[in-house]
Image 1 (cartoon, rainbow, N blue to C red):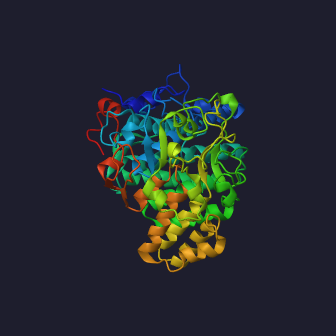
Image 2 (image 1 turned 30 degrees about the horizontal axis):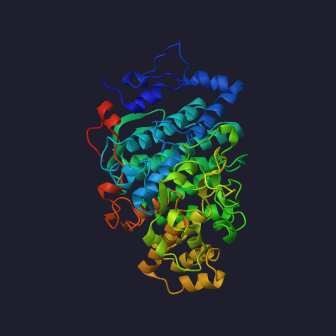
Image 3 (image 1 turned 180 degrees about the horizontal axis):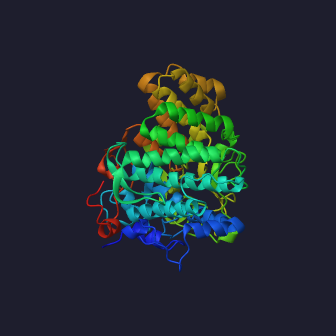
Amino acid sequence: MKRSYLCTLIAASLLGAGCSQEFLEPKRDTSILTNEDVAEIAETNPAIINGALEGVYSYMVQNRAVTTGHYDFGQKGVDIWMDIVCGDMALSASAYGWYDNPANLLSTVDFTRAENRTIWQYYYKVINLSNNVINYIGGNGVTPDTAEGRHIMGQAKALRAYAYFYLAQLFQREYNPTQPILPFYNGEISNYGKVPASQIYDLIISDLNTSIELLDDYSRDTKYKVNKSVAQGLLAYTYAAMGNYQQARVFADQVIATSGSPLTTLGQTAFPGTGSGFNNVNTPSWIWGYDITDVMGEQLINWWGQMDYFTYSYASAGDQKAIDDALYAAIPPGDVRKTQFSTSPATLLMPLNKFFAPARTWQGQYFITTDYLFMRVDEFYLLSAEAAARTGDEAAARTRLAELLTQRLAGGAGAATAYVTGLTGQALQNAIYLQTRIELWGEGKSYLAMKRNQATVTRGTNHVFRAGQSFQYNSDELSFQIPQIELNNNPAITEQN
């Protein structure tokens, strides 16, 4: 029978297992390594498992891992697409065309477009690689005896959950637990057809709860590795996506209380403030990020290349990404975040003072060493506020929002208090959503907030495509399509989303 592309990924793994019914049968081929073989080897050489886990992290930042497209560079590539599709990021000029399809909302309605394939294969490869790591140390139901084993298992399960979470957000129009949405692979069970969203979310929640427990005593040596706070943050996002705001608030508050990460300061928020640039993984507010070094040889095909005017690549040469001008207009004078964006005609509303190579010389960064941001603590002040407002604790919601705005408004705590005073009901929820869009612009989180808030988005006037048009959060244009390669090769999937 035909084999799905996902099966091909699994078959290409170290285990060498096929993706047929026989894969589930207890036959032994002595010419290949089994899970048990690898587990036995790992007891005497744990570097094997550590290497497999490192491979997952490396894949998250690998460029052209799926296609030859210059937009294919792991999670940060998907972040740009999400911001463009939800409309908060405007493709304000297009010289090379790399972002024309998502900006024109063609990728989201046409399963033949490469963007769908890139997203699908990227996340399922993360799942496959994470499943390998989990299997190497015993499988889903095993709690390793050693601290090192527990920490590896905790990271692998969180990474699998992370990939499934993003797949669910991108390929389901809105949360519906009974709707079949995705194939299911957990390293032991393979269901090539679409399973209900509830099965996907159950695995995400189980993985993240296990991860939180296993990583309780874990102290990582670098921020690209998942720790307990990252797992808590992912779980907060998961519960919020499901509409379970009570649990979302619990875990958002845990991140704030236990991560040890302070809010991004006023100075760090925009140039010329001290520590500004959102370019350094050592920024205290960053919970999860990747240290891009010169050894990696990053050039041109990179998130910074697509976003930063000061990096030698596309953003500096005519493929301009800017804040939607209507969203920019909603930022009041005196808010430091308004100064993140250029007001010069040639670079109008580009994020010249939010994301920049430190030398701030046009096209000056050729070998890229500015870092990738995946998660920062500020997100959870906003998510906690959102969850509190949704569950009726409006006083707590206003307090959380004011804590963040104290570091953003020129008047400090007084201005923040004045902003939140009197906000109630839908007006309070709308204010938190607006502040989320402003604060996290360009970081890939506005799309998630759009779906949670069931928003209708209206594009401003500075988009090359679809300027002034409005779209509901659950419209066909705002979710991606199961790619053609999967539908062609996987007979268990017979229809789109």
